[in-house]
Amino acid sequence: MSRVLIINGPNLNLLGIRKKEHYGSETLEDINLFIKEYFDNTGILFDFFQSNSEGEIIDKIHKSLDTKIDYIVINPGALTHYSYSIRDAIEAVRIPTVEVHLSNIHARENFRGKSVIAPVCIGQISGLRKFGYIYAINALKEKKDINGGK
Image (cartoon, rainbow, N blue to C red; front, top):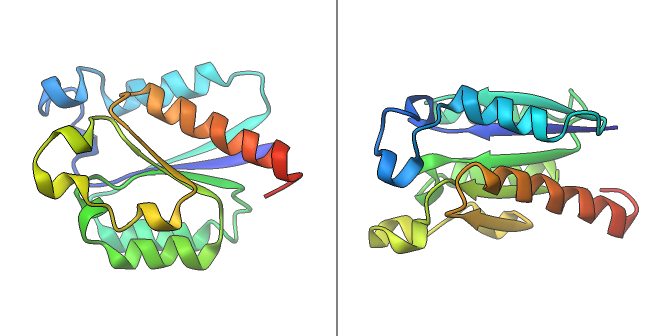
């Protein structure tokens, strides 16, 4: 049984309202339900977390050590481009992490293509909307199978 922490950063609580051409019309709750249903009966336990506060996200990453989280999937939103503190938190806890973005950050404004988070993650997935989370979780599961653990 694996425990996966799904972290969504600033403004992702506005999914379904904000820039539907980039993010789609589904709400964050819709996406979370989709993830849970997709992995139903697989033994994966999910902890979903969203915050507009960088500090709260860092605290949640730190606490993942105490709550025995096996993997992290993070959509840091705009914090992707400048949050060295989130980067350092991911690096410090040493929990395999995948960075996810609903939109294709490389096809948008130039500043969105730079991630300070990606170098401490095992991978980055962007532009696949809610399926990016599915691919990230599957990649983390494969990592465990390939490496015999974390």
